[in-house]
Each structure stands twice: as structure tokens, then as C-alpha cells.
Image (cartoon, rainbow, N blue to C red; front, side, top):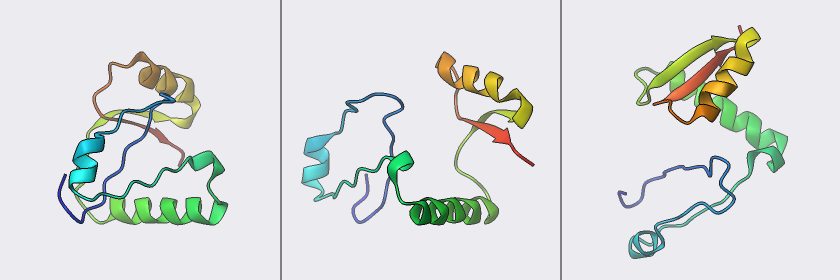
Length: 94
């Protein structure tokens, strides 16, 4: 983890996610916890806009594990829940 950088993580269903506390303290990191479903709508919309802009700007740094049409959302969810995917599962809505 670089100093003065922003990173993100999510619990992925784990109500007690582990954090590297010593490493965070050593680097004087500040941790902000957020639960998206309870975040104000304006902040969620801003996050969506930021993500859309980031994705539109060029090369992405993540791997797409699978792409599914909206009608196959159940299959997409099953792919995520299986726990064997490497990367992000995308559901296309357009």
C-alpha cells in the first residue's frame, strides 16, 4: 500500500472483514467504512458517475470473469456465489 493513496475493499458478505491493522497504522492510513445501501442517494449517484467516467477513460485494471445480459441475472449471481470466478461479473443493462 503506497502512502497518500486511496484504496478500496469490500467485505463480500463477511460481517467481520479482516484489516491489516498494523500496516494501516504504520502508514498513518485513514479507514472509512461505508455500506452502500445506506449511503445517501446523492453520494451513490456521484460514485456511479465517477465509476462510469473511470471506465470510459481507457484501459481498465480489472479482469472480466463473465458478462451476462440482464435477463440472465440469476446466472450472473450464481457465478459470483460459486466463489470460483477470477475477476468481475458484469450484467449488461443496455
